[in-house]
Length: 71
Image 1 (cartoon, rainbow, N blue to C red):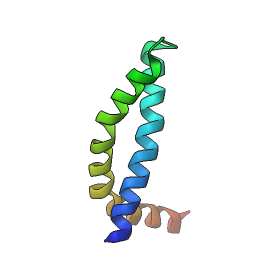
Image 2: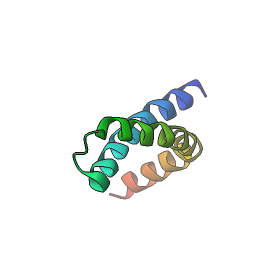
Image 3: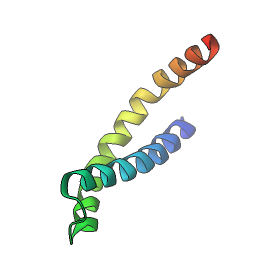
Image 4: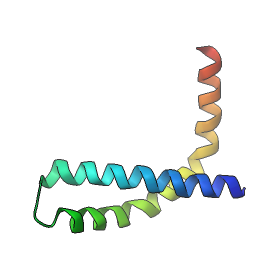
């Protein structure tokens, strides 16, 4: 369980940080307050991503194993 929590925190941190930067850039471009807007979007996205990663992680892990066995 400890591993699952740490994994969800790290994965959600990384993905939400990068994805929020990308979506913010696509939506507003190189705005003068880009970093502030991006950080606001990221702070909203990270908790949601963490919960999703924690809940869906075991299922996706099993699915990845099944797919890898068939390839």
